[in-house]
Length: 128
Image (cartoon, rainbow, N blue to C red; front, side, top):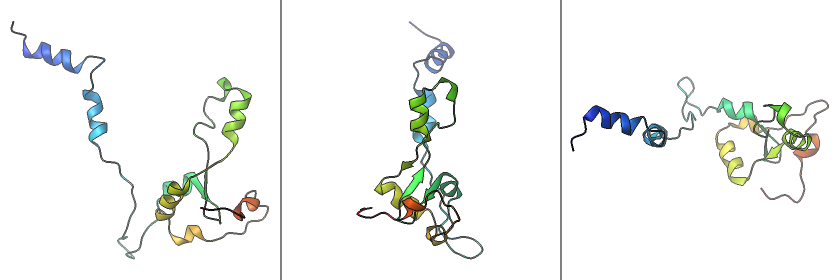
């Protein structure tokens, strides 16, 4: 019962149940592109994706938008759209990780005129 190699190859690698196309993503190491030592000044650098996606409150919490809050709104119910409009708080480990990925410049307090997040910057009885 001899099966030609190319038929066996086609059967193994073109099957819809094949797992081989998932291997490169499994073997790839996750990367957190944090620069520990910059080339010009030798200082840590902020990961710009954190600044674009998150907002740091002065009490140390980080706020983010919900995933898919502006995608395919025509098919979502009103309650789901309302839930997506609300901001989400990051948990303790996420806040610590995001603090490591930013420099002290982004952790200082900013005073903005008519800041919509003003009441959230100072929280009482809050353990982070």
